[in-house]
Amino acid sequence: MPASAQGPVPGSPTRADGRASFQKTRRRASMQALLLALPLLVFLLSTFIAPIMLLLARSVQNREVPDSMPALARALDAWDGGGVPDEHTFALLAAGLKEAQQSGQLGTAARRLNFAQPEFRSLLMRTARQLPAEAPPAWKTTLVGLDDRWNSPETWRLLKRAAASPTPDYLLAAVDAQVTPQGAVGFVPDNASVYRQAFARTISISAAVTLLCLVLGYPVAWLLANLPAKSSNRLMLLVIVPFWTSLLVRTTAWYVLLQPGGVINSLLMGLGLATHPLPLIFNRAGVLIGMTHVLLPYMILAIYSVMKSVSPVYMRAAQSLGAHPFTAFVRIYVPQTLPGVGAGCFLVFVLALGYYITPALLGGAGDEMISQLIAMQTNTQLNWGLAGALSAYLVIFTAIFYFLFNRIVGIDRLRFG
Figure 1 (tube, one colour):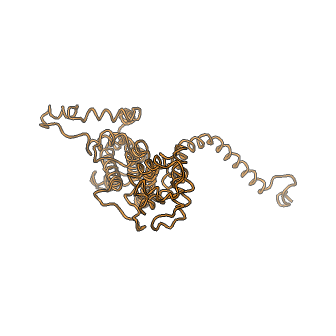
Figure 2: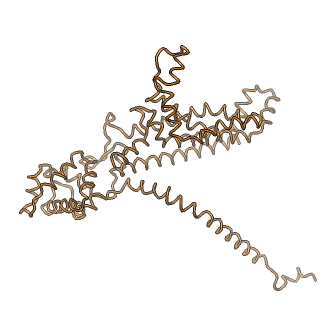
Figure 3: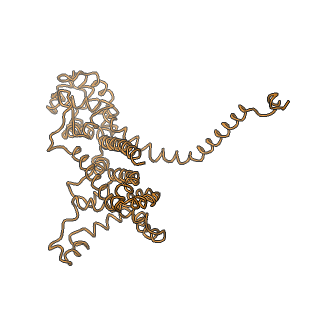
């Protein structure tokens, strides 16, 4: 009888042993790949992911007042918000002002409170300077005598909100909303709205730049994909060369070209196409021109990568069956390139959402994008909480557009694939 019919030979590997050995080899290979990628993961975590997460966490953190005056923050947390607090809370306020002034944290707390009410910083600073050296019989009477605003319930309610952490105040302020004295959430009037208009302006500029890049980039990508290899490689250099030039240099070059006495206006007037310099800078036109020039290569490369894989056989087959070349192009060729169009549009749109240098140099007062407001809050106003809230909304918008993009591309692939 053959050995196979009698069962496995003693000492020979079984199927289970082979499967276990294969899984062990796969685990070893996966571990080696993880170890090779570990330095890159650590670098990304420490220099990219962690800073972003810390900035986003600032949108709900509110540690300035609790860190500088912890006893007062605990008392305000227990206060019901009705009327004016009791004598004990006034005494904690005076003690907290003295301690914060001695530790150097009073300026930080005052700056945070000044975001809620512009006069709050001067109130805290003046009160801290005028506090008596010895404790008076009644701190409430003394503080109200220094400034009548300490007898206002609204002042204490603002102080209570500033002492609460986490807080929704920054997230509300980032969409021009605030908590009313009655505790409800309300939006500021449209004529006083800043951040909602900035978000709408950012989305509209990004969409316009994406459309311009698509209109200009699609023919170029088609030309690169259908030219002979030698000519295509030469033209591809013109698309790639801008990546080797600094973004600031390219934007500054447009600053020189678009100004009233620049090259473009001088050429137009010299050719008789314009009688006076056209307004091409410090407005929406300058922003669109500069951003389109910077982002156009991304659109071209995304579409070109898909067009290169489209076989010309389909177009020839459609024309051989009697289709007009334009009809064959629209109904046969274009649908096959839609994945590249979708990828290019998404890439350009997302990059345009966070653009800063080009709008800052070429745009005017009415062309501020949300990235400029984030930079202003971090560099000028030092309001990291509001900057974190604006960044959080920008991340949310990007995630929403990514979800919509995935849905649209999935439908197109099912329809035209």
